[in-house]
Image (cartoon, rainbow, N blue to C red):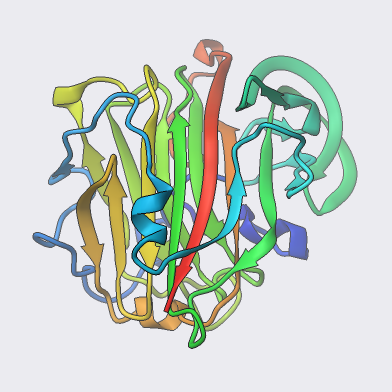
Length: 306
């Protein structure tokens, strides 16, 4: 689940990869991120989370305690709150992102990955065209978010059923332009062929395309509770000046307290959802086995607090 540059800035004309996960370890420097309860290797020592199938989220619990909702899409209407991606990704991704693969039906956003041949932009920021054998969808909020001196806490929430299928990578995250200068927070990334676990991470660097956060990713396993693609789960990250608090289905599972978290403070980011085909979330990929699949999103919410 490694990546060197992210899609995350393709809309700003910078090389990035969409969706797929954490940077290559050869590009990282320093010591391990401090997490709760212990420092964890993202693969060998997972955080164990006992998830709750079809868990839901209560806004009132937050608003009664001083939180204010600043973004809310329950997908009962159109996608006017979002910028829809069109074009390919980088770093071994195989799909062309296109608006046609986004469908809103019965209050659910469906992001569909398909095995089909199309011609489209080489990348989201490159108008030259090429042929793709797969399509999928991605979108990012038009409304920016930021934990800053005026609103020092931001909470990102989405209720999601991840895509099932070999070769697919579901993601809910936020990022800023000029990656990673404005940072990136990956709330949830999951492979469709092994959806009993998911990954969380964050990135920052003072220069474009140079992440300095040391091994930020954590691997969350819920294998005792089943497959994340069989029902809905609520993924959250609370972002403030000094920590990133990660939750699934209402449970705190990790607190990222690296000194680099403070470097994200005051940076502007955009909430993002996408479903990649291939990418560096897969170390090896047999294209013959890639499956169609769908990422289902019930809602996305953003809250701020003093």
